Image (cartoon, helix red, strand yellow):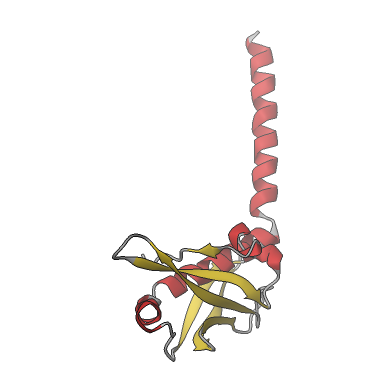
Length: 152
């Protein structure tokens, strides 16, 4: 009985390890993580933009370049620039040159105001447009839904 239990346990561990390895070594997983990291980085710089959009319905001129460090599919530690700028009432996230599939690609963020109650609002962002392939975007972005980008 105990021997059968050990055999079954060993098989389950091997299967779980194989699934984990295939998931984390998947190149798309690393690119999706970099996409999410770019949204999180933008989140730390969005307060002025969102306050202005809620007040005036306009996104002010803005430009900033950040360096994002990420782990590639081969576990190499790499960096890529992320330029945040605004135009036509949208935020443009543009990746710089690099080894990522996201290199020299863009994400266009379109603001949408959501009324929370009588006195407060928040800005959500649609992230469907831009040149980054849909397979690297979160599900909500692929579906054209507006997402909350946290500033924490």
